[in-house]
Figure 1 (cartoon, rainbow, N blue to C red):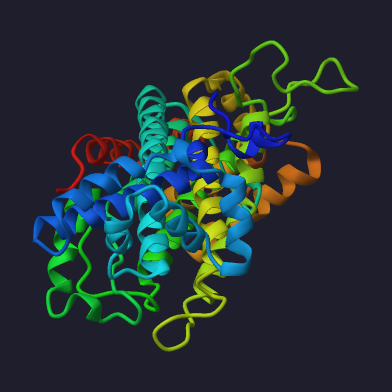
Figure 2: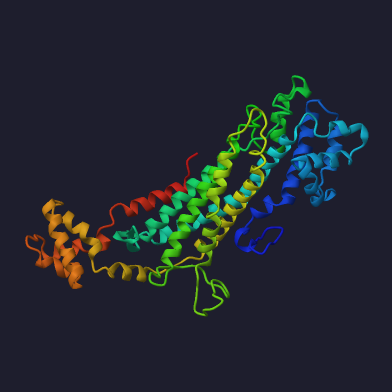
Length: 443
């Protein structure tokens, strides 16, 4: 388990996995310094600053040279952490080269590009965990393609499904969420004071492709200081992924209920225990996923609300993004790490699934009986009456149906109509399609 660099009291739940270290204060500082060094390198590449200046900046942009606490203190009166960082950075190069530090840039250029770099680095372990979750679902779907269980709608037994189909649904949603994150374009930001790069004359736009290449980010069409679409798309994609993780965790938690017992999380000494009850085996993984994703929609909403910004530079909405974006990446990454462990060790109980399906004494097969009787309103009325009798008298549907007037099925036909394995429709085909799409994604 990888915890956040600060190792807080709650980090075991909310900062699990590889994304958390990539959004720490130290990671943000490293990203800002990488942007400053890359900017100087890009400018030197087209002759806007001396090669000596770019080399000096690269040497000076080492995180160990800077004190996070001091930068934090300096950020408060300045309004952002880039201003004290640039001041400290200039002190680390000789006076003749200081004018080339942060050349033509504004604080938002560095902060926005660092945000995209932080996101890119945090997404790498998050995407790896999502891939592992999907692989685990693919295995479950294949292994349980024909494992019959009760479908549940509005928390009640519906018609039979298979656990393979349920896992295939998880798989398909995970693959879509992962693809949406992987396909995001995370662009550099470089526009200067008001998006014109006027300090560089008419050559500022030439820096953008070189800066993007230096950092492995996308090149924007133009500066996006108050066009927050890139951040909003990232936030929404994280929100979608979190929702997917939360849906799967909800299913697992419900399947793990004592009264259901159809699946169980992996066990280990001390895992899922209770401070009061020695017998407990709580679904701590699913619980932790849900605790993380519960906080995500509000963070996404904050980012979307912050899109409404003033003119060329914002006062307030932009600044509100910084910690919000870190939280989104950290919580989604933590949820993905938790769910990976849950799915890779999930224990499935097919016998319990069948026993629970049988507990409703054949009633989930009522729809099939209506269909076998022709699907007419009269057939529906006949089966409705038989279901009511079965419930009132504690009978199985098989016991209640022969007494229904007008029943035209032979005993053998009735047995076939009441067989859950014979009423799975296209479940197997849908599992196969999900598996094929997972193994051969588009593009």
